Image (cartoon, rainbow over all chains, first blue to last red; front, side, top):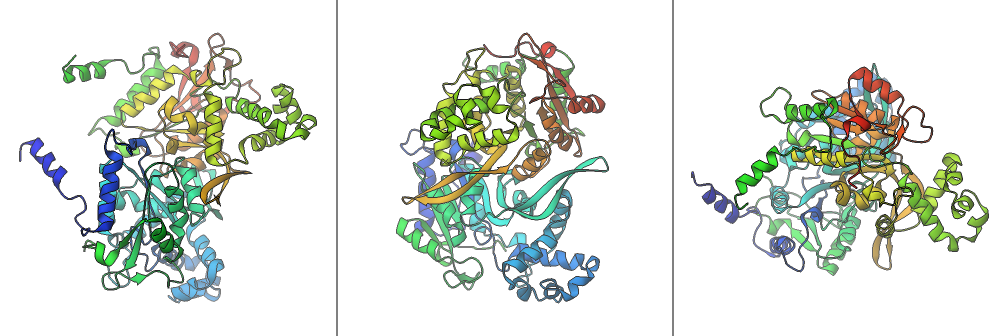
Length: 317
Length: 317
């Protein structure tokens, strides 16, 4: 144990993906990493260009229910005393009755109203504090686990495996950029500057001699679907070589990744495990719908993870 | 020479800032770095939080003339055969006559017209190719040097010194994000994902089966003045601990940096050397104006680099 060389050789030979079953999905990942990291090989990719992107909801953690919507509803209940008229006004009235499903069923207009009332009007620092306090305590309605425990163990291993091989890992999600940044480093090892997401506008102000950024009730950028390649280029400025998603909203990100020169890797997480998680794809109406993406993945030979068969463990607990 | 330990001890004791004269500016930098990197010290900053920001024009390279404006005018001359009406329409007519000063004197409207005509309408990949070819060949009108040789040697040393001490270095400039990204890694060692700048909107399209991002003639974000803290938060998501600028357009970036908790470092490069570069500050009308910033730097004890006295060498040539 006091021989450092022994320890490092143990580390090098240990399985970096212990929660993955042997199979085509696992093998395709290991083969790709070996190919792009082998010096002198035809497909070698310099470390600076090893950019790998991960969707969040449904790819890195469970998306039933939508965690950020739960935060928004809790925040609205917290703010309700200052807004007495919410009691009689939708979608707030439903939120206050605890009927989140009805509130969120009100379509995009309702969603935007809930998002703005819960996400704007504070400074960036206060907002980060609210999210931090919430995520440290809020629990999943079915499992009773913290939401940050509802992350996929095989994907945590994959993130670490890629980083150990010189990849820079980014999150590219339709979720709120400032929401995810609060826990991305602690939970995923992804620092805030490598998180790309949906945002509202902010404004610089000096309040009592102290500079602050105030969050305005206006959408700045929607990082979903065709917005994902736009957000990727804005934040990263070069084409990624690997991308991981689970829904049709990730399709353009995967297309954008796949269409660069040289070796590329695209993977869809397919929710097939009704016993250990949820089974959904083409039938899903509201989120996580994987329909076009599944067809394109099959046509183009992208990797499809069958959660039921490819993952030995889903959650750590 | 075949003793690695000897080599590293030589490297460790070599002066990391050989182009800086001894003096308060140099000392303040060295003291700050020592303070935040010393494990166990009261002011120790973990590596992940060592974020340092650099303005580009006038801070990292010479801003006379504005390099990106020179690119825009050359690009307009290149595109002119496809736009015969430009011959009689300002600001294009002035550009085509080689009278860039008159063209750019037309105020913001003229600048936006020139910027859109020269920067939009292409894919992101084609635009990067145009900039790459131009910057490899275009030369400064007075010195005859490539623009990428007109970088300040002391600042290159400072960038490398900070990185050697675990800092992550970012560029935060009013210049075009996709313009700077073409050369930032080669010239400054700053990768594209660590460049923040002004941008136009882009749109995802599939052309002949190939996904592209098309650059639209619409401003997306202006990364100047009060925009800089907004851009910093959008891209990085945490407060920087050090910021380097040269003009009033950098003031809010320095205020934002200075107002966080813990040790902070702010520095203004003051253009005082009429012989080796240019001397300008409060009198400058069009760009690089340093007026309010100079007063605030003096009032708050920020570091002011007197280029004439603090820099042994300005350019490498």
